[in-house]
Length: 154
Image 1 (cartoon, one colour):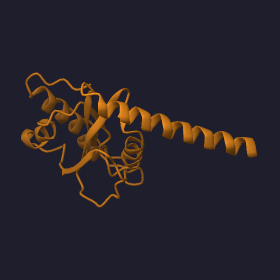
Image 2 (spheres, one colour; image 1 turned 90 degrees about the vertical axis):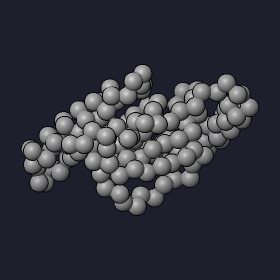
Image 3 (cartoon, one colour; image 1 turned 135 degrees about the vertical axis):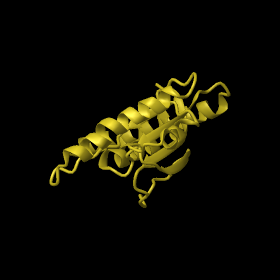
């Protein structure tokens, strides 16, 4: 049991040390690639956990996260973890018939998009609502991305 605790503490210390060294190296390297991330559906379980993970890592690969935009149809207070990057929130309905409202999410050209917005009310399943959000909403996002010339997120 003691060995397991010691091993976990060693891993945490090593992770913290490696993270600190990597962060210092990245901050001193002017050629470091930066990354802007968009998360739709951030108020859901997966979105909240993804934000926690990103705030603890602050990197994706060798790229430093500089900005995260959180988008959801509801604008609720979600406690945000302390981060070293800019976090912005936007209220948007991806099922909107107005394509400009969805296109606004992509004007800043986020590098990576985590599309987690969905309708998943198991206890009150409504096919039309599920289809509107999960299919039409996703299509609206793809159409909005295509509408921006030269934009190709990863």
